[in-house]
Image (cartoon, rainbow, N blue to C red; front, top):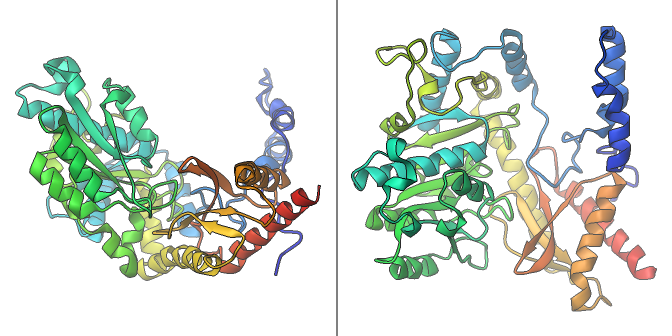
Length: 458
């Protein structure tokens, strides 16, 4: 079953060697080089060190090569180099972004009043969502956050944002950038399947009443650690009770709502005040390609800034730039449109379903194997586990997982990752490509066992 010589994912070179190879590319000189020579230089110096996301043994992160439909849209985007902030700079681009945002709201079954905007990344989408949450809370306190900032709160240290212990680190970045500090974050316990523990959440909310001001709760729809989908509907109930903003960070997992058998995991998403989604993950749209949805399109008004020549207040044409900070933004919408229109939803859903089934099948295959310890049952396309061969003491298992990871990565032949769960080092497989099969994943397990065997024999 195991392929002894898989296509290398990258050169396997150490950082020093990569830097040495790339040095001539940044040796900027007065005279340029002919295009043919430039192409040869890039091919020789850079391409061997780029990761081959298109290979089935890439099983560590959320990247993928864009399909033909996406490349077509990206080429048009590159050829025309449109800024799509508003009608003045691109009538077609601005209008397409507006139309696509609302079409996506319908596709995901969001409310008629919902809207969306394209962002540079899920990190910035999460940051803007938290800003909108704090802004709304400030309005309820009787002041304009845009004018007075955090200083407008009588006791800003009381502000609390509740997130999963497994939430993405971008939420910490957001809190820092917004000036609240990490002390405003309240980390929520997770259950055995790494979802927010609803009973624990209810108890924490009760404890915080009167002592803290709960501004926002964040449900992660596909954590980047294990792919777990937090219980959105019960969190929506709690937000309705406390008046908190509900944000869903679906950067990784939200696309899987389009797969009918997985859609129930996302129940309650239509009640979220905002949702982050990254089409550059499962749909392989070229980066940057992220979105922020809001339940009420009027919520975007909190972001609007006008000028005397740009985004004029009296303008009636589409101006996506009023919804988020960048005053220059690429036509990221087009590759996503060409994917969805070119492939069709049936094709897209089939491609989304494939990695989910592959990971679920791997979990079923491994659950009774004596040298494997599963860390959770996968909600989406991520599986965390530990290899526990006979003869390895419990206090040596963390070191063994790290050794397995380092040896596999150094080979350049396949890519896995590691993380920490319950203070233990665990191995992590991620599948986003529909071309990575159960057999490919089983080959990775076999490769890990071979590395472990060699380690035990030394």
